[in-house]
Amino acid sequence: MVTQPEVISSLNEAETNALGLWQQIKEDWIAHGRDWTKPGFRAVVVQRFGVWRMKIEPKLLRAPFSILYRALYRKIRNNYGIELPYTVELGRRVIIEHQGAIVIHGNCTIGDDSIIRQGVTLGNRYLDRPFDAPKLGARVNVGAGAKIFGDVAVGDDANVGANAVVLRDIPPGATAVGIPAKIITSGKSGKKLG
Image (cartoon, rainbow, N blue to C red):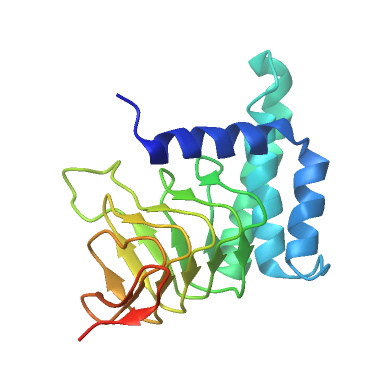
């Protein structure tokens, strides 16, 4: 049985794949304030290039593009401190606001129009489950230094506070802060809890 988030994820992925590489890069450039020098924009472009090159068949023709991708990926990681592998399911117009200490697990999903800031880690929680990774919905706002670990779903329009450590799902529209993160406002109403 397919759940609603899986259907939405498939639609978003299909929509993103329908765009050409240059159309995606143009959208990302506009989302990053039309500034090609921003490290976050550069990291997203390299990720998009990595996804695009995997569509090249046969593998022999893909090889030079793979060598270029690996060199660019390492340059972004080492110079800017942004690890964003091509295996991440990256939505449209995702913004990486600042550089430094950003680590994103290769199995993560990040929805359209989300914002990731410096010091953010989206990773696995348990060594015996290496493929568990966070799934962020659309328009998720992740504060500086936030850590989201494990097979956690962060709903659309959710906010993760700076330095929060998220170990549980966050419902759509909610705000979570603290260590471990607790929901302080629920849903679209913005109603404060506690």
